[in-house]
Image 1 (spheres, protein in one colour):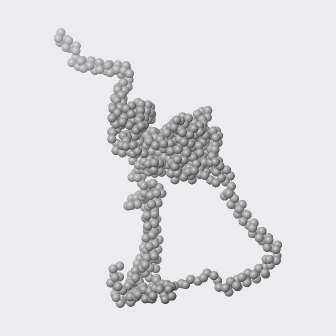
Image 2: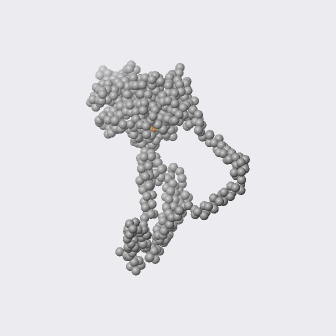
Length: 355
Length: 267
Ligand code: FES
């Protein structure tokens, strides 16, 4: 833009002084309205050459946008989709040339339109300051008077106050319409039944290994190991699998019986095999960052930490309850089975949660 | 006579007799010897001896002279040769200093020495043994991905990039870890990692997981077509990138839009 600096002198307006030289404080002690500062011209306002240059710049942006659009269509035709086509582009890394070209050309064509419009407004469109005074939002007293008069007139002519039957039935009709909505929306609640309190676990249900889909023998679970289990009647192909696993997922660990501090918890396990809900009691993240030496389970969402050797007590973080434990035993063939459903609701707390 | 006797013994007779004798002894040996295990036993016990010597120099100060454990290091009875191969083979052992977690560092023993120590530790009590090649190769990447997300991703991240645990512990990145060491880690559960024994995670599933990990972490062989991974550590790096660069660009544009246009003024 150095060419603008040596613009010929005669194009420049007279230098003006701000505030029109008026006093800042008026005689009666109030701040005087300083008014608008005098308008300053842009170079493009007074130099035809500069204006033409700006015009060309704006047009260049729009032209660039057109080119990019053509490029978009061209890349759509040229590049083939699919994972076998990829190129290394610094510093982005390995990308599909199709996606990359489409993104870049579309981005340029949109950005260039915006940039051209902004440049146009800043250099060529009028930038004269002008004042738009504020007005009260209220209508004038005459208009208000007229509206009230019309309303009273209308009420009188409709006989709204006189014909009580019409009025009452109309009110009744209007009051009843929302009932249809209430009936429809009832499906969304507000009665969640017992869904939050119960899970799919029942007494006598076998624990199924999520890796193999087979029942789990107590002897298969080694000290220090971690296994995930779900109820025997659940399968990944079930339509409601996601709904159920969100409550039924289990974490199966085995501790040396001597390491278990909470005797009740030990009694609910089988020879040191303990089954805990995998759903964090804070806001319900799946939680299985198990440290086998400290027996701590960490929740990745907000760092709640539970001590599985102590009844999954919360030892750190925002969770409000220990992880619920499932009481387990073995059936006649040595497979682990639930001796009971969960006795407390799994997952996050809720208002009506029973303790 | 001289001539006769000379004739009776062919010049090669001695050689023939020698060959017969050798064959006979060899055959007898092969038939009567308690198979070849005697020599194998000998080399085995030699290996254990060597391993014990290495153990007493390099490991005994923490694990005890007989691997019984001290308050500095756990007992090694029953950890098996796989645990030794993993811990020493990834440079975690010998540990440099106590701490939240012993990191992997430069491996200071060669594989032969590691095998000797592993053989010695295996004699302390039976445990998982070092796997052979066919136990950890040839898995299915797709099913490995599913298994990985079920069993491993909670700590090691969906792309095997690793992640933080409590109190300074962490799950290390899986990039560049050999298939054998991944297998051993799953089998033995080193440090705070739980183990995934074959009884609950069959060998084929371990192969699949290894195939997935090696596919996902080897970006040269399997580039990710999404461009920059930003460490593949999820919303933290992606969010930071978005806040700094995307928002930065937006702010820059906003400033440009609202900036005062240059005015022409007489100086
Ligand atoms: S969901 Fe587990 S700590 Fe918040």
